[in-house]
Image (cartoon, rainbow, N blue to C red; front, side, top):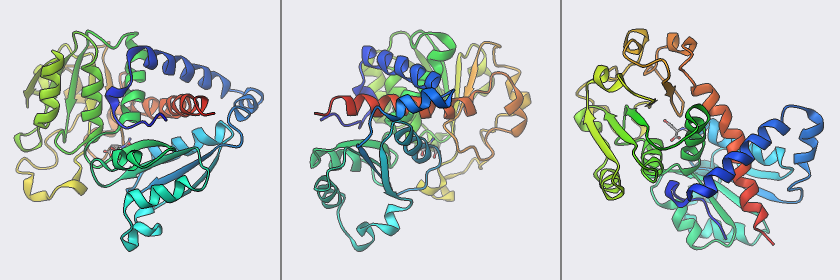
Length: 311
Ligand code: NCD
């Protein structure tokens, strides 16, 4: 059984196949007639959706993806409150029980690092990690990679600036790891000292020979960047006490964009709070809403790939 747990589990051929399939699903989605074709693909399959943390994009796009593939979706909006987790049940026991119900995939977001892997260890049903604590967000990394590929036609030889709360954001961790499986990428991490990228990811980049810098110099980092990947402060994962540099330390606005090349793209996993000024939305380099939209088709492709392998 194929679970989706980490960003680096996908090899390059597999990513290329997923991207091709995402384009197919995007095309099919343009007309109701062709939409009805994709509905037939996975009729009779069931996806369980269990989110222990708030989610807009990951949950809606996975549930809509499943619906467009003809699957039924059973879930709870708030598994932390409305499942037996509230009574102290372990993730393993919850997943063991769902395995008894003849479902085909379980999409989950958990507060704790490593919970998706713990679920997978006891599950014959495919586990899809929709974000586990501050560890990984593999399906986000795949849709991010797709968005980069859409613009540049490659995932190697790119200068990628990742900024914001790198210590507590799972999307930057997964994307950095995924990009480090490609050659000649250079990553510039922009943050304050207390919110820098964790040592385990830096070690991973070293092992793969991906070069990187850590700086707080936005101007220098933006000059020559292909991709700017910005993130919000993950305040739910740490206390305000740590924010010696304030919450405004990394705001991108029109004036910051002066340094960014024309060909570059500005990405953000969303939600955006105040770290990208609304005036940036009109800039042709801002692709974050398109990036979110790509998530639907990339997730249809991932679900389709998982389900196609089932007997
Ligand atoms: C991200 C997440 O949940 O990690 N959101 C998302 O899935 N697009 C980013 C965030 O919450 O900051």
